[in-house]
Length: 267
Ligand SMILES: [Zn+2]
Image 1 (cartoon, helix red, strand yellow):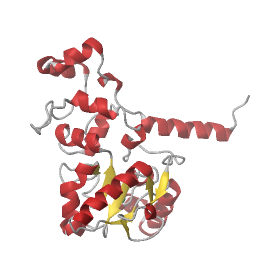
Image 2: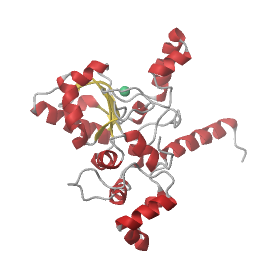
Image 3: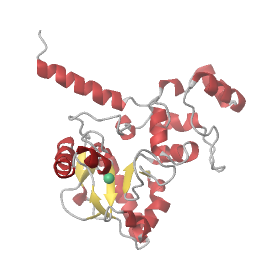
Image 4: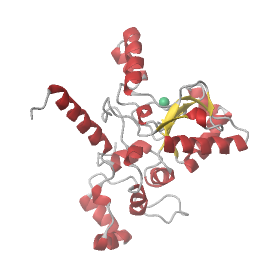
C-alpha cells in the first residue's frame, strides 16, 4: 500500500497532537523499591538532583496541612484523562484535528450563566463549571461565561481577521495563533467582559479565591509572570489534584507545572 500525501499529513498532525498529549513524566511513576527510596526526604532530594534535570521549584509542599508528597500528587494525576493536562503554549501546539472527546452545550446546565448561545465545553469541565457556578450563586455571585470552546478553525478565523487589520506580529501579541489556544481543549473559559477590570469585580474576586477548590486554574496569573500577559478572566479546568500540585510545588504556576509534567525545561 502506498501512503498518499494526505495520509502523511494526517500522520504528521497526529504525531503533533500526540507530542502535545504526552501525559505524565514516566520517571515519576512510583513503584517498588524506588518508591520506598523516594519517600525518604533526604534521599528524595538526592534522587531529584541526580536524575531530574528540571526539578520543580520546591521539594516540599508550602501548605503544612497537606500530607501529599509530589510523587503522591503525580500518582493521582496518572488516573486522570491525559487530555485534561495537555501542555498548550506558544511552542506546543495542538493539531488542526484536535477536538475534545465529549463536547456539551452549556445551556444544559441551569446554574451556568452565559453571555450568548453556542458555548460548549468538554463534559467534565462543563460539570465542574456548573458546580463552580452553583457555589458562586449561593454566595450571591454570578459568573458570566463569555467564551468557552473554540475550534482550530474558529481560532484561525479570529486570528486571520485580526492579522488582516493589524498585521501578523501585532495580532500574535493579543491572540493565540491557531493550535496554541487553550480554548481548543474545551476545558477553558473566559468570564465577564474579558478585560483587566474583571479582576476587580465581585465575580473576579470570588473566583480568584474559590476557583481552585473546584479544580479551576488561572492560566496566566499576574504572579509568577509567564509568557502571556495577566488574564484574570481566563480559567482552565485541570481538576483539584493538579491545582494542589500547581499551588504546593510550582508557586501557583499552571504553566510551570505542565512543563514539568511533560518533561520540558521549567521556564
Ligand atoms: Zn481565554
